[in-house]
Length: 147
Image (cartoon, rainbow, N blue to C red):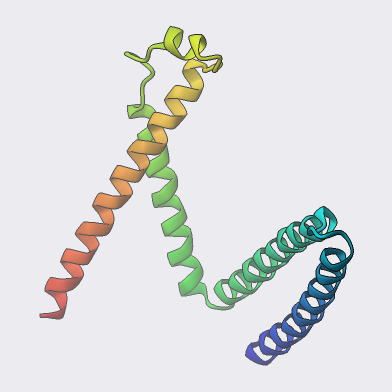
């Protein structure tokens, strides 16, 4: 599997280099002719970055899932982690509230906010706090276990 990933990385690197040269030459030609850079080149770079990100994310996800599925022990740990994360999000949502939020003040600024949106934002903040606390505790416990 490592050899396949290495070959894919080399191919993507060569494709990226070729596209970079094409874009750099096109941009320098446009600047020489018009005195300003082309929006088409910038748009093409943004589109290239967008699609490259999607492709890399999909390949990474597939290789990760293949690695996890190959060993039952890893799969069990991954499912436990996903379950703990889902429990944290559920607890955060149940703790979250939209009380005390000034909806009129947001409406005056032209921002339409619902109670559900405020509750999900609050749940996201609570999730962050709980996960950060769990990370700190894990680092402390790991530090004591090493000694």
